[in-house]
Length: 235
Image (spheres, rainbow, N blue to C red):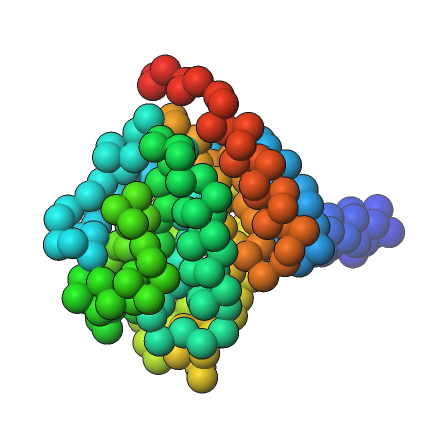
């Protein structure tokens, strides 16, 4: 091999290594968000919520279309969770009281343990927090819920009890950065403790950490601003 050929091969190897390292770094940045970061807490546009149809605790079927025209706060919980879920639900209960005079606000809690959290179980849980009809508790197909959390809302969720990882069709390469914050109870389900603000047009506008007081203060300010915004006409 000539000196020129050796130089060309070395240059190609350096390029390949750089691409691999760059891909790893990009993947890490996509899959993590610093807990103290407030970037996601500023009102922006982080994509549209994908269509879904789930079952509410009342037994009726509800879909994204039922939320059009409303500003909503959504989180992912499960009724046997003893870590962040009680805090998340207490925060939503407080929001329900503070914004009681706002008819176009909806609160939405989606279970990540649908096998256990039937509508009847969710009704009992909702009663514990004094949930009104404006606070929906949804359950449904596990794959659809996990794909909605991961690919729709970009929130982490993992069930260590299951070896099956949902195969979500949406590509993650063009999706917004993940708002990852995993918590679990006794190794049951790990999930995000972030709450998501969605506007009347179904656009994700901000993420807030339920376990952080300052973050929840910013959520209230953002929520008040969203409630004053007119709905963006659907495309």
